[in-house]
Length: 337
Image (cartoon, rainbow, N blue to C red; front, side):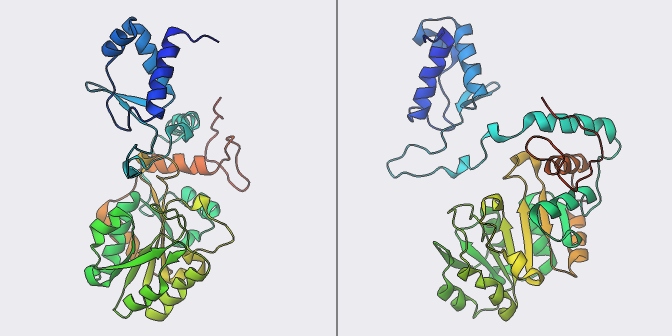
């Protein structure tokens, strides 16, 4: 089947992107330049650009031009991966459902933009069921950076010498904690011999990503989950940084399951929804919730309540928008077409 003029232009540009001729974040020629190259009018090229934009291959920046969004792997002789493109494909985000949820929430709950400091109670209940976590030790805060900041405030340790991090690990944790101790990662988790050596020093906190590590993709083996026993033996707390547990093997327990009294569970909702959500689930050991709430309150009084309610409705429904068993929505929100 012969392609229409604008479709043929879009196909040519798409092929250039996929083959690496245009790399991620690179500015592509202007509509005028393409019109001249393809010997057509600018309106035809504009339609081609619109088609590529709908396919999430390019994005237009007002006053600047159009830039490549994908593919995510940059062409490089050393096969270097560009971690700046570490985000979900926009096509995976349920825009229609979110729009319907927010529109209805503004109609039903326009006077409830704020939530309690610990987070919206309905969202906490939904997340507790969804991730199988204790609701009575849970709070919602504004993103991973604030989560790490609250942890630092609560423990008030000299984190430079009392903090241990995975190597590699979350850049936010590196910049905030500036830890002097790093444990080497193997294919199935930390090098236990190296870890035992480090634990001869007075370690207070160990920040780790045991489930689908955000840089390497590794997950702790059952043997390496022995870190939980070491936390009890050496009197330190584990900060379990979880951003992609949706892809974990459910039969392998998490540190929060094995050692809840020594684990601070940090679960970002940004990686599985969209980065602008800026909501984080925090589960803390029993007896520390008040300290964490006070530290959170000193950073900001409350996270955006309307977005919390939107996430409550989203997590309380399945992919088709059907209400999940046990969830009672606060409003009658129509399923998007």
